[in-house]
Structures are given as C-alpha cells and as structure tokens.
Length: 513
Ligand code: UN1
Image (tube, rainbow, N blue to C red; front, side, top):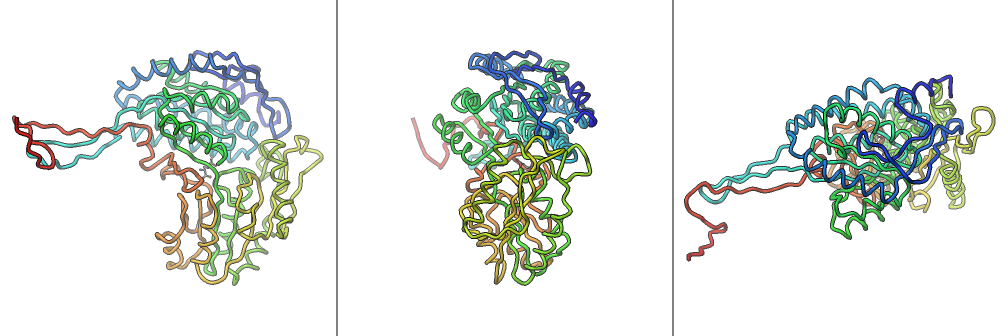
C-alpha cells in the first residue's frame, strides 16, 4: 500500500510502531498485551498497540471522575470552542485519517473520507448545540411559582464502538457528550486499534492546548473484557455501545443490573421495497451502493430487496447487470468500488451465509466466492453475491455482516411488502422506492415501516448526522447523532421555584399546622 502514502499518513497522525492504548489525554500508559493490527488490504502489519489492564483502567476512571468535576463547571459554549478547535484539526487531517481508516478497516478511501466528514459534521453540530442544550418552561398550577427543566452534565460516558465505523461513531458520541459536559472513555474495536490511537492523539493535543482537565477524552484498548470493566462500573452512568445484537444483549444486561443507562446501536436487517412506480435506475444505484458499500459491513447496509412481481424481472436483471461492473480490490485505489472484509472470520461468516441460503432453498443469482491471486493476498477479498430467498429463511432473518443481498418478491400492495420488511427482529433502516404518493405515505405512516430510519427514494445507508440515528426492536432502541439525541448525555432536572411569602401545596392539598 506504500504507493498510496500510508507511511506518511501514519506519521501525520503521530502513530509509532508500538503505541500505548490507554490515555487520559496527553498521558499515555498501558501495561496489557500487545495487539497487532494487520491490514485486510494487503495483510501487512501496520503497527502494535498495548492493551489496557484493570489497573490502567482504574487510573483512567479516577482521572475521568476528577476531570469531570472541573469540566462540568465550564460554560457549555467554552466546551463548544474546544470541539470547534478539535474539528479544525479533523479538517486538517481529513486525508491521512481517511486513509488510515481505509487501510486498517478496508473500506474504500472515498468512504474513509466520508467517515471523517461525518466526524466534522457532528462537531459542527455540537458547536452550535453548545449554545442551546435547552430545556422547557412550564406553567405552574400554583400562583407565584415558576417551573422549568434544565439539563446538567451526566458524568462519565463509556463508548464502545465497532470496527466498521472506527472513527465516526466515536465522534457522534463524544462531540455531543463533550459539549454536554461529560468525560468520555472510549473503547474502540480491537480490530482497528490504530485509528483509535490516532483520534485520541488529535483530541489530546487540542485538549492540552485548551487546558481541558485530564480524563475528558480517554482511551482504553482491548477485547470485551476491557469493555466489561466499564459496563459493570457504576462510576460510568451511561454506556453507549455499537456492535452486534449478541454483544448488545450482554452489555444491556450488565448495565441494567446496576440500573445504569445504555444507548444501544446494534444490528440491522435493512430492506428496500421496490414498487411498480419505482425509478429503476435510482433503485439500482441505491440498492447496489447499500449492499456492497463498505463491503456490506454497515449496520445500515441493504440486506433485502423486496420487489413487486410486476417489476421483479426488470429489477433483478438491472441489479445483476450492475454487479458485473463492480471492481473489487485495494480500497485505496479509487478505481475500485469494494475493498476487503475486515478479517478471515468475516470471510467465513460470509461463506456460511451463502451455503446456508442454498441449503434452505435459495437460488444464487450472482455467485460469491473468495478472491485469490495478485492483489488479494490478504485472503479477505470476496465477491458481492445475490441470492433469491424467502424472508422466513433462518439465514435471511439473521444479519450477515458482508456483501450478501437477498432478493424477494411481493404481490399485492405496499402492506404486503411491509409485512416482509417488518417481519424480522431488527429495526434499523428501511427504504421505499416509489413515485406514488399513496405508497410513500403508507410506508411512513403508523402502519408503515417499524424502523428507526425510513427513507423514500434513497437507499438504507448513508444517513446524515443531522437526524437521530438508531433503530427499534433488537437494534436496541438507542438514538445517536443529531436531533435531540444529546439529551441522553445529560441528566434532566425539573425545578419549581416559589417566590411568594406562602407555601401553597400542589394538587390543592391543605396542610395547616
Ligand atoms: C454503522 O454502520 O454503524 O448511515 C453506522 C450510514 C452511516 C452510519 C452507519 N452514516 O450508513
């Protein structure tokens, strides 16, 4: 990958051969095992990161507790000013960071840049938000009383993020939590430890220049056992976790056992409904990008295409034809559309899914398979595949984190398509392709899509940060990013103030002494 300037990118981001994976700011330490990060792009060792031990974690959490006590007293717009400067650095380092994301995770360079752009966008949003963070005022039932609500900083926010969006998801959480006055402890994915160190480097520098107390941006590194240190720790009032449903269930139970709050952003099983009134050209672009972008490793990736019988053959032929144009290879080479899967385990899961769908009676339309030979030495490159399948198949009900698209037919009207679309346990993203107002509005109505995201005439992936991001059912119910998602990072307080000389009780109760 050297011809793509990886060495320079690592240098620009301040990465070394061996990095400490624990930091409370400009203080880096780590006494755990060494995690080696290999690129799925070419199989090369990119660098090493030392994991966090229990003792290291203890130091992080006590520093964060102390830092929070000071940080919460800073006026929110001043906290916003720090985020603004952090954002300047992101803008300056967009290319090296996007490149590292692409090289360590395997998504295309364009998508790596897009991910850094999401960080930039959420920081812009957070800076504006820092002058708002508004509560409501209400009218009291008592004379001479005023009632309102306010939002105070919450405390320490534990962020557990996944390999597929190794930088953006951290920023969605942290940019908001920082302006809300919280201290953040981030455990990134152990599959992308260098991008985590790179991000923390950027934050640490800006925070130090602004004399932000230590611990407000903290990093810990390791596998689930390191995550568990936070989920079981009642000094961490909120855990925001992104990843699989299996992981989410474990995290949710651990956090609930101590009555903490959790924000869960788990798996999806996202579908596009294609009606007879759909624009076929746009459907193909939306569906193909949704299914093969990030090699099918977005939680918003399109997994199912639910197509009306009248246009089924037309859509099928167009999508199959489009798959023939897809170029698979080094994601840093902008001629390629699709890079590798994250690792060989992901390759196995993909292969298992393709085998299962055939065993259950599905029909392969576009053959998958693992690529070999020059340029594919890492063993992580696979061919995006399409299978005709039925919604009730066990494998279709399950999220396979890879480029496998299931095609299915519906008869009747939109409610028949919706039965299929909603007939899964996950509820993240959904879309309908139609120029018919009645169909579009039915899809968006109370009886329509049951997902957290429902789009008309765009695909399932590529959400903007301005809206709240997340989903229902087994997707976990959490909302991150825009709209009023910030509220979870604060504690709400209702205040009633009596400015009379009497003490009238609520509900007209008389209590004379
Ligand atoms: C994820 O896959 O974890 O909508 C998030 C999208 C991106 C975020 C995906 N903005 O595809």
